[in-house]
Image (cartoon, one colour):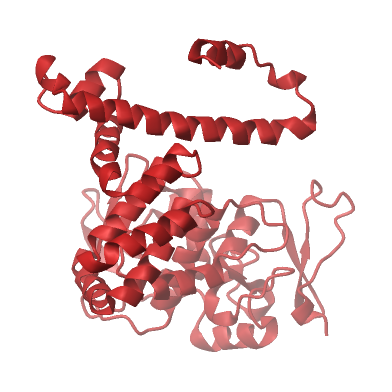
Length: 395
């Protein structure tokens, strides 16, 4: 079929007219064609470089020629120029690309893997990797490549792993809305420990509507909260690390205005009320210019003895279906202490960070039955609002 005929065929294709059993096979055929086209375009680009067309057209490199002629992004132009450079030394890989069995990403993975191997092993390794690339996506091929390298050059792989420690780093900054944006790199050993700990906390809960990314973010916060609660972190200014929020008593009582933090800037009074459920409050009297005149002693929302009693009674997060242990929870006032609620066993319940947020944001109610917390779901979850209790508290 001529190219123009094929293009006419594609433009005339009406997906909604295809039978269901033809949709996926058609997608697979088009993917194969697309990969074959990539190989042909790489051959043409290679011929353009051989004939120095980039010089003829006043471009300093093949990548610039492709960028300007094909109207590509600089990244895509460099990627295609790299394909031209890599394919001649990868005969089996080039054949797989021309057959439409692999993508350009596979080519780059194989090339990067071979570059890190001793020269005497490259030919055999290229043949094996090209064969496996036909059935693996490029991420899976990366792992296969490292496996091959570990077999053929174990010392080199270990040295690379050790060198990767120097690449570790973490950046965090606040955006205009006070969100903390995190970007970082961990070496393989640290990354494995981090992923193991985080994934144990990021598992979906019952009736969990969070995205995987949201579960990962919540898991990271839980790791931080447990570390801060463990009393094992270094002292700062003579005290354990702590989140400090400043807000006027009137604003906290009314749920209006804002509180101020050390890092994120202003927080809504409603969020401060949630945080204050299990926090230390220190009253400070200011003059008209904001200069402290007097300060009182701190009052803990949940003293150690009360925390122990809550742990014995609730055995962890008391929310129905939750299995978080006491060490992973916060003490929540059913009637907020700022509204006169007592800091007592009969007015407090342990909740993990996720369910603490649920209680504050949704219309759940907590009551006590025979001294144990019972949860009443919002009507939009259960119109009858049948009481629910964590199975650990069922008797």
